[in-house]
Every structure is written in structure tokens, then in C-alpha cells.
Image (cartoon, rainbow, N blue to C red):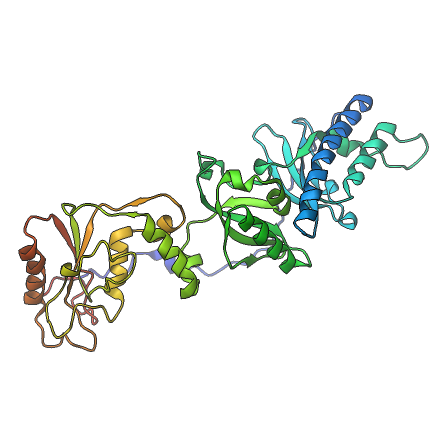
Length: 406
């Protein structure tokens, strides 16, 4: 009998009356990082030269956008700061000219990387600021020379895959040509549907598989894309993205998918399955039966391995529980197998013995003898095969409180 101990889990039931105290704001410590002055006559022209190189690449992208009849022409460029300077990234954006900040990444050495989307015709904004910096502020005037901003910028270049990668480096595939699922984060602009349609068209044109659904945030639209890192480095694709991340391992994407959209995923995985030979072990399920017609189960569950303890019940699964259990026993985490393109090598087969029937068909059955019969059936038919039994069956009443029963 369970021991009644009133002192257990006392932290869940506080008995001390609450006290009312005034809120005190913690003291803020502001660490200022001054920006060392650079030699304007050297630093400014060096940055202008880097922008000139970007302009050459920009024209190629503009031509590609026009050829593909795409709207929203622009490029992503990356600013990197000096280690000893604080880059005020907000000053890089300019809403009036459509220049937006895509992402900001702090580096281990203390430098800052900021990726900025620049629409066609707005590169002149940065060129003008650098020229004002080179000229300096005339004495006695209030003309801006952008010294604090330009002195903090070490380099500027065309954005690469790394510029848009905002996830942990440990989840990047080692192989540039390994196809995996990515999260493509697009800017959420007023013409949102046009941006989505253009991205899907371009992505599919270079062989990427794009999800038909998207998640919308106030500033971003997220779609799933399957492909290689090499494919994502396409300049047009990069110019349309704000961030790239690795797709998260969650089944929510598949659970919320209509059945008709699940079919291509199932067919793709079924074609990649490598089934072991007949000597491999088996997992024998004692449950509600299994519907072996499912494409992911059919080759691992031979029709003569689908058994029942009562022929009147049939071997099929009318409740769904046994079939779902079969998938779990065969694949474990099915999400992992669905989200890559490599072969999936299975290590065992399945067997099924139906011991539960729908519609209270077990009321006159004695479960002890029923289980003995269920275990005996596959062992008699295949005496040499190593197997483990799985019986995820319990009572609906729970009166035994976990104790064994017949």
C-alpha cells in the first residue's frame, strides 16, 4: 500500500502568506565602445572600391531578374566591423530608400556582421555616405560626415550563404551536395504573395523542392526548402532571402499536412527503403492488428506474418492503434527518415498478431490464455527467427494500479 506522506512535494503547496514589495529596477551598466578614427583618405576609397566590385555583380543579378520576369530586384550585401569598433547596424537601414536589415551576427572575435538588402538603384546611398566621410565635415557647418558609422566598417561585400546563415554551425551538412531540408526566411513585404510565388518559381527552376505551406511572422515569411547548400548559393536565390536555417525536427509540419500532400513524401521514402534479408530479426506486435497495405509497412510485413487469435475478427486493424505502433517499431522517429534523401536501411521485419478487437469483442476472452496463444503462433510458424514481442495493451479501468494480472 502506498505510504501517505504529507511532507512530500511541499514546494508545490506553499503555506507562507505572500509579501508585497515595490519593484526596484536593476542598475544598468552601459559599456561604451569608442570607434577609433581611421585615415579617411585611405579608408574611404577602399570601401568605395569594394562597392564598385559589388555593382558589377549587381548588374548580373539585375539582368537575371529581368530575364526571369521577377519583381523586387535587389541584392544582399554584408558589412563587417572592425574588432575594436561598435557598428551601429541601425544606421545601415534606410526605409525611405527601401534598404532593410536582414540579419546581424556577433562573431567570437568581437566583430559584427550585418547583412542588408539593397533594392535596385539604392547602392548610391552608401556611396554618398562614404564620399561625405572622405570630404569630412566643413568647419562651422552641421553637414553629416557619417564618421562613426564609416570608421566602424572594415569591409563590405556581396552576401554569401554564410551571410544569411543564422543557425548553429553544428547543424550544417559537411557535404555541400547533401540534400536536406532548410528553413528559407523571406522578407514580409506588402506584396507578400508575389514574393512567395517568385521564390517558389525560381527555387523549383533550379531543382529545389519547396513546401506548399508557409509560416508568416510580422517581418518574415518562412517556407521549407529541400536541396543542397550548393543550390542555395545561387545568387538569385540568395538575393531573395533574409535568413537561412536548418529545418527543425518536428512532426508538426507533417501532422498538419492534408493526406493528398503526404503521398509524395510517403512514396519518396518508400523508394529509399533497404529491406533486410529473411534472416533478420522481427518485432512481433500483439495489438489491434496491422494494415499492411501501407506503402511504408508492406515490404517489412509479409502477408503470412499477419495473424489473429480469432479468425472472426480478421487480421486487419480497424482501430489504427496497431498500424501506428508498427510504424513506430519499424522506423522510430519517422521525421528523421522523411527529411533527408539518403537510403534508409532497416534492420528488422515486423510480425502482427491481433489480440484486441473493436466493439468489445474481448469481453468473453481470458487475456492470459489469449496472450499465450498469440505468442505461440509466430514461434510455431517460424521457429528459427529471433524476435521480440511488443504488447502495448492495458486495461481501460486501471484498477490494478500497475500490478500484474491474468
